[in-house]
Image 1 (cartoon, one colour):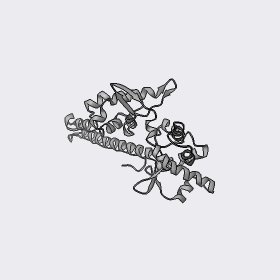
Image 2: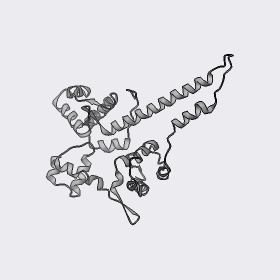
Image 3: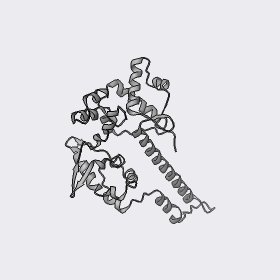
Image 4: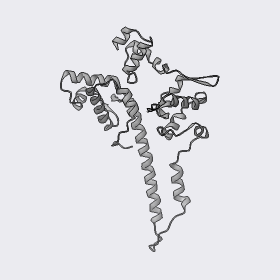
Length: 265
């Protein structure tokens, strides 16, 4: 696995939604930390002085901004390093893809070398295709299940291989009516201004389908279901990266938390 992936993928819709309440200084700090983390396998060392140096934070005010961003978006992993969960998942996806392509490239080179071998007279001798090329194609092709193929539709945003990876983690009951839930979720989050739904692999990984219920074959979507799942964290004052200030405002508006709990947040 490589230690360097120079291009950092960003899910633009998610990034905008998660940073909508940040001012320009906070946004700059967050982006700088994401970039530096990506250069280190999507991790930041648990050393505040070094992180302050990365962000050029020389006074108390700017250090407090860094502390706020770390607390809001990053958590400590098993290696005692700061990670942003979505970025960590993306790093693993990209490095796995890089490794698969690297293996495919090596096999392709081996096949080419065999084809270019001569019989000692300077004449190229092409080996039987069944001995070299066919295994290469089989080894690098993902075989999707028939059940998954019935579920999958290319919406121009989701990645099929990543979606299949998440699909395989689900049980039979969880997959019931999943296609209907996915189609309704996309419909509910699409308008004339564009598509605002998450990619299918994230729809499955974050279990957004749990927010959608099926009654008598009619699919109903509760837009507050996901927010309700985080109410207990806000009541306890436990900050996690997935809870945005907008979500807390909605909790107050819907009567899910008190004004005092909102003020403490």
